Amino acid sequence: GAGVSQSPSNKVTEKGKDVELRCDPISGHTALYWYRQSLGQGLEFLIYFQGNSAPDKSGLPSDRFSAERTGGSVSTLTIQRTQQEDSAVYLCASSQAGTRGDTQYFGPGTRLTVL
Amino acid sequence: GEDVEQSLFLSVREGDSSVINCTYTDSSSTYLYWYKQEPGAGLQLLTYIFSNMDMKQDQRLTVLLNKKDKHLSLRIADTQTGDSAIYFCAEPTSGTYKYIFGTGTRLKVLA
Image 1 (cartoon, each protein chain N blue to C red):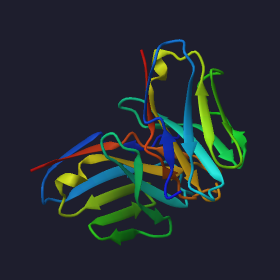
Image 2 (cartoon, rainbow over the protein chains, first blue to last red):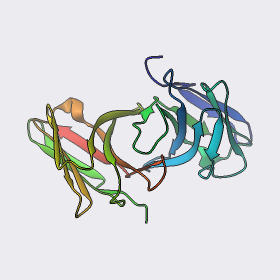
Image 3 (cartoon, rainbow over the protein chains, first blue to last red):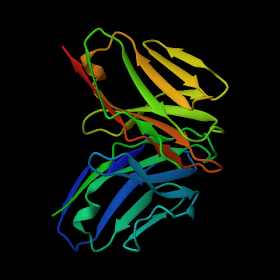
Image 4 (cartoon, chains in turn purple, green):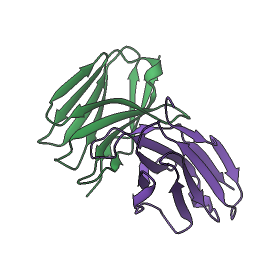
């Protein structure tokens, strides 16, 4: 596609429910990244995919968070048993090769609110 | 450490120049980036500079890089109300592909 797309744009859920956030990267980009932006904070790295594999999951805050990528394209970030502190904007980015200095292009984000 | 530092707020009058500053950490960074985030939107790549450059100009934008002091700045000439946004500087972390972002500078342009 022309750019990185994410869905839904907004998600309101109740504490304890599971949510799935979707990211469609730019066509042909092999690398995909998830970041989290909490209110008034910078961006926090969550996970990185090169193709379908995730060599770096170090940023995932707890085992309630997981992500997968299929077909080297779409990625899904799943948060189980959501907590109020999970409320944030979740941003997805993709880059052509995933090498150092490779420019990352961001989607519009999914704003998650946990009540 | 891995902190990229920016001041949190900047307020300027329409037509004036804005200068947003950033201090980064990794002297071996190959590229340094500026992203713009408008309210309710994702991050838009604004410009970047390669580490062997001191300056890059792109229309109203001028990026200055001082590698000795690990200082990056973004100057916006003739600032317009549409420039009101949060500006993030970012650097790739040492030996990896991850970006470290600053906390962002919120630019407010007064009419």
